[in-house]
Image (cartoon, rainbow, N blue to C red; front, top):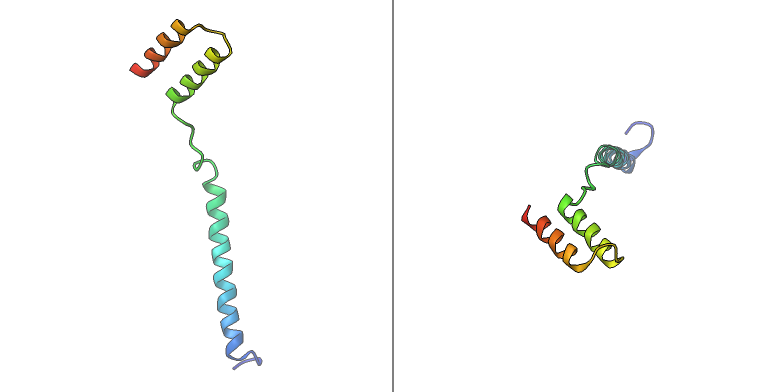
Length: 75
């Protein structure tokens, strides 16, 4: 069986190439999918969070908070 590797040597060669291929595919997917896996939340949720923070910090009063919240939910 060529160079004394026997049956076990052939299997190890197959395993080596399979592992190498899996690592290559995994690396390429990680490199090209890095930006698309984290999507930004919808703008409405961000605006509502900002509004809640402004209300909690006392920057706006309850009437203004309710009006702006209502305006955001209509969109």
